Amino acid sequence: MSVQEHSRETYGNYVTGFPNDNMDNLLFGKKYNEKVDGIESTSRSIGWVLAGGYSYKYKYSIDFNLRLDGSSEFGKDNRWAPFWSAGLRWDAKKETWLANLSWLSDFVLRATYGTTGSQGFNPYQAHATTLTPTCCCLTTLRTPQVAKFLPCTTKN
Image 1 (cartoon, helix red, strand yellow):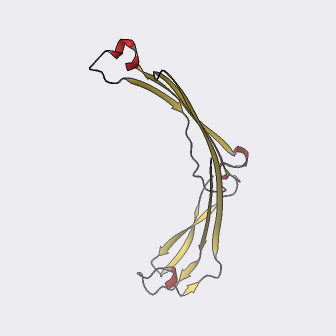
Image 2 (image 1 turned 30 degrees about the vertical axis):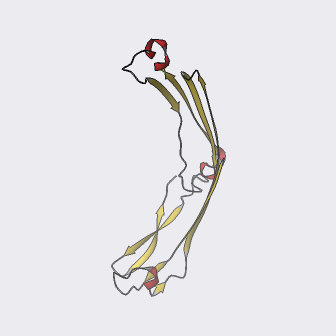
Image 3 (image 1 turned 90 degrees about the vertical axis):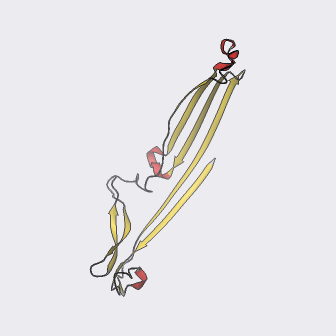
């Protein structure tokens, strides 16, 4: 079982009055906007793994894997996602008709099939379809020595 929580906070402000183009760190600005913008996000996930296999005479083998992930990033109505895989293995060299071939040291055939998935969504992205979350990106505008956190939109 795995359990994870990721929290993030971002704050930004509009700053002017830098001494020159090379000194564009926010600390060098002379005038700050009184309103500070910010974003908070938290995401949580939990997952379980089940794996198993069987081999008959080390010649014929089967294996399976199942993973069940739950995440706040998946949205309220689709909180859980199952991922699975199954595989077959045949060691043909252990068959009597191939065992005596000295020039063939190993001959194994394998086949596997399964599903994959990922999280990686923006936290709260699945909460509403009409709301467009924004994030802040620091952009330095060189002309009047201005640094500003500009909104970057993320579309659903």
